[in-house]
Image (cartoon, rainbow, N blue to C red):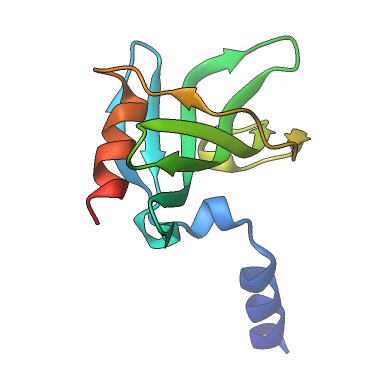
Length: 125
């Protein structure tokens, strides 16, 4: 009886908790990860999931992590956000505080940023 319950619990777990996050970079109070297993290429574009994990709570809604699905244009060196979710706890766990499923406009990727590091890693694969 316990085994089926365990399997059910593992199946329902958040994708954030079981993802194989690779570190993309660090800032003063955060670490940004991406999940290489989620890379999906279509022509010159790549879609990938990333996670921003904060040392301390941020914002009025007090979130500690954010997951994003982003699309990168490997030729034009630009990106856009497709999905965003704020989480109460670190590493994309806890209560989902807010989601944004509205794709955003394309923006250029600045040199020397963590976003550029993800762009380089995903576009060369």
